[in-house]
Length: 114
Length: 107
Image (cartoon, rainbow over all chains, first blue to last red; front, side, top):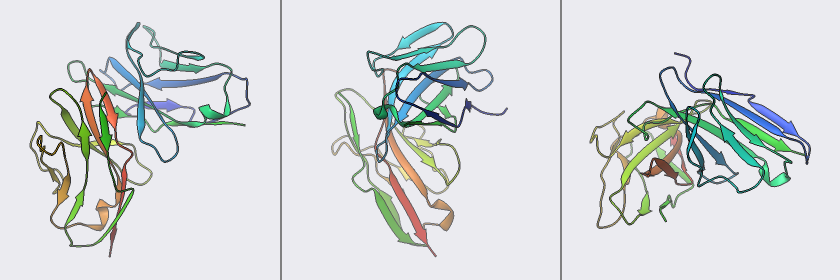
């Protein structure tokens, strides 16, 4: 089991461009979580998804950010019209059915907005 | 709203010395508390959770509801314990993380 996969590991975007971050959960895991980590801070919850459903998006900024977890393929976190303040490390985690708190983390994507 | 506080950003101890990483939380309900660890160049991983009452790699953590604390302890630190440690609170299927403590165990 390769664990949670995220790509790309590093992403550089200019202000106004779109960023797409991908996450493939562990085999057998149907729950995906996205977190953002700003410098010197802890991970902040953004969104919790199951296949084809957004369960909790209370941590997502209201504009420019969206997430999906389609029936086939990885989960995608999409940031439109990126700004400098979006520069951060974005982590994806997955958990098995029935236990939301035993989360397995990916290596993260470091987004830099220039 | 829930909150997790780790007052120490950096903590250094000598090998063989006891170590305690502090964690305080605020939450109105009955909390589930966790410690996650990130070793150098590795992913964040679950170290222990309070409901399991296990000792993992010699670490223990006791939930103190009166003091709203969940401090992580180890009686004899090892160099391989050097890592970033995050305390986390689980509620409504979310994890709320503290800002982390970087532990360095000196030889």
